[in-house]
Image 1 (tube, rainbow, N blue to C red):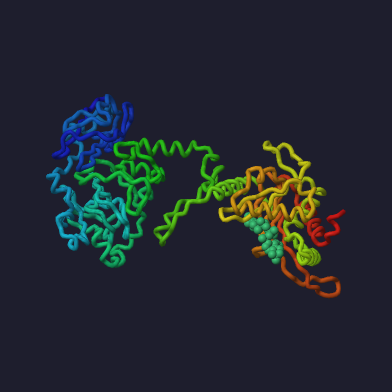
Image 2 (image 1 turned 90 degrees about the horizontal axis):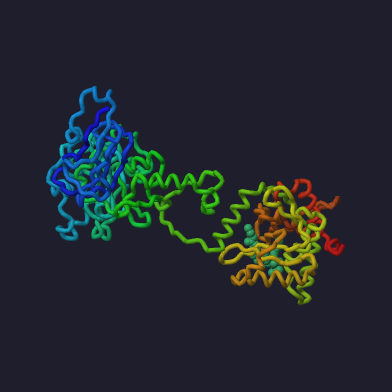
Length: 557
Ligand code: COA
């Protein structure tokens, strides 16, 4: 073993530059060229790479320390075999020297005029070119951080270049909209190469949209830095030389043209793990995202219990639906969900995931029922819709098929049979779906059921239902008959085991053995929990229901 002292290399005209990120700790085994730490002045971000492979010992720096060229970083314990090979040069010499042209010259992109100095009209379009990048030529573009049409802030990085010695971020010289992006990943550039046109605020208002991008491939390149583009370079990390003003910390919300505030090492790390840096909270200075932040993010995601995942996101190991930036396809509006919708979404999702659903359909001949209902209405009594009749028929069917009036115990070991019959019905309200419950429906007549359902439906629409009026349901009915449509597949309202979907009745020809008769048929769809209910049991239940609705006299039996 041999120890090699590692010092801060030639960093041009920078002195007392703060250490903003330490990428190694004592005992870490690292590869040659892996980044040790990140320095950040008001003009440049610099990553200092390891001059050789080895184990980090006696780390001398901490975040916040200010360093200049020659400051001691650590010692590198290098295996003998490696040492006896061509002897490593002293640290400062091994580390790729930073191209150190005068900072002011390298910061401003060449050759556009300073934005502020130009008159408003002249500053409308800025021709953005590769700035002075020291002695580097034909440096490959490894990452494009913007695409045509992106609105970006001054100093936000536009792209990343990477030579075998240095990684360079090219910042935007002004705030504006990216037009006519000329580069794509893999292009090789030198100082002065055209990057894009930047339409500044003054020009954005007046100028017509730019023609399509000169380099369509570049325009199509995803801006998301977590999306792999090209094969990763062999020596991805070195010194970021004279990258001009440091990128600003990202705003809380993602906007077009924004890039996460993180160094190339962190970005590469995130890219390898498939982490979207926009989702990672930066704990570094000014919100800079550190490698530990990415590690913490991944750890948290891996240990997050499925129940903690939002309703819209997958749980129980189900792959989530990938996030899509819809704004890239056209105008969008993001509207927060109403509280009821969020609650019902979570509830429906749980029921959908937990219950093996089967839906059995049938049609009930309600010709006589409808004639009776109409006659009652004409007599000027209580307005009767179909719903109270259906509730009545359901309670009668539940009496004969009690397993539909049951719930599975949470451990799945027993069936809890209910001796009461509280029937819920789905009500459509401006804020979303609610399910008021009619208590002891089996003990109430059609008129009382009609009154109660009408009152509960009104309360539901007015948002005045009390929590107690939505609790304790045994079986639910979802009636879309007043709206239209035929059959649908309702989701069982867990922990109930069955739900009846009712659709709009229609007159259809029915064969009576001699001729076709015009009959009013009401489509019914019975969804049930197949863990509790067998198919034959469900078929018998729905057949009884249709009989009850076809001949009201049966309800009196
Ligand atoms: N076939 C034909 N007509 C029907 C019908 C059916 N199956 N069901 C209802 N109608 C008729 C009614 O008789 C009434 O007509 P009328 O005024 O001529 O008598 C009209 O449609 C409107 O009835 P509706 O307001 O739906 O009353 P209802 O008592 O049948 O239903 C609610 C009350 C609360 C269930 C209903 O208003 C509602 O909100 N339905 C939506 C439920 C829902 O969103 N389910 C989806 C859950 S995923």
